[in-house]
Length: 82
Image 1 (cartoon, rainbow, N blue to C red):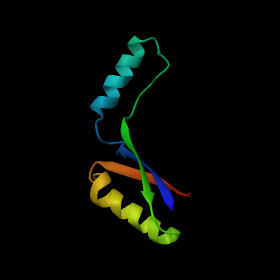
Image 2: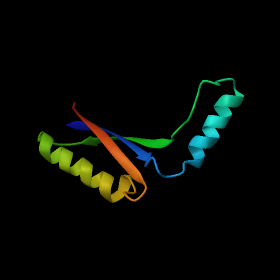
Image 3: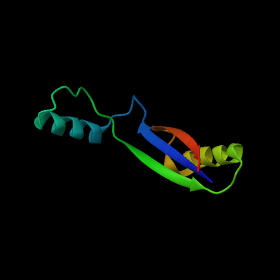
């Protein structure tokens, strides 16, 4: 079995209102060293099987078809054998 740890973030050119709100709130709380915040999503997906190449193909397809919007988001993932 594998666990895929998937990070989805907005592309750098896409405005991130949630990140801006978090950055302002951190500043109000006294964290004035924060320059910027980008908000995103994190998923952990367990995948049955022992073939790493097949698991990687499935994770990539999941990200492209459902977990991310390829127009405005990018994704990265790590695959771990459990």
